[in-house]
Image (cartoon, rainbow, N blue to C red; front, top):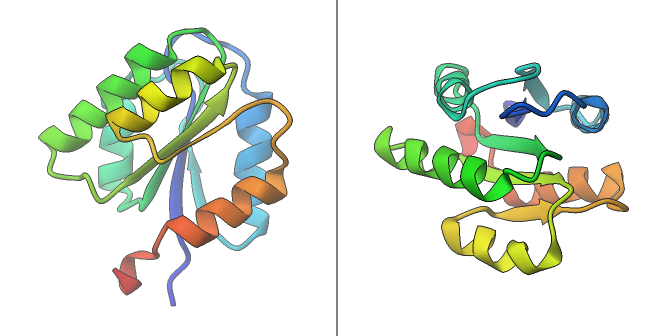
Length: 134
């Protein structure tokens, strides 16, 4: 079976990517193929990368407070590209009150500070299907 392919992205103007890199490394160490897009990506760049790389999931790391706008735009672009089979999850500094709204938009999971990399790896493994098993 092919490994799960995940794009980890830092959309927006936030310049802090240590958490994203830690998650990317944990997913890679668990046997997944991880494409880290780097800092300051637009939602358009993130979705384009996910489609081009045949990713099964997009993990967004957002610390800037722009999570509602950035998650919404990524979900909209996936719909426009007919790529709603790509699972979107994320984490960062996201108020608990915003999580139900993000889930209503189509975000599959939101991980807040204190979540362990083991919990994230287990969630991705349970909720994201490799391309050859879909």
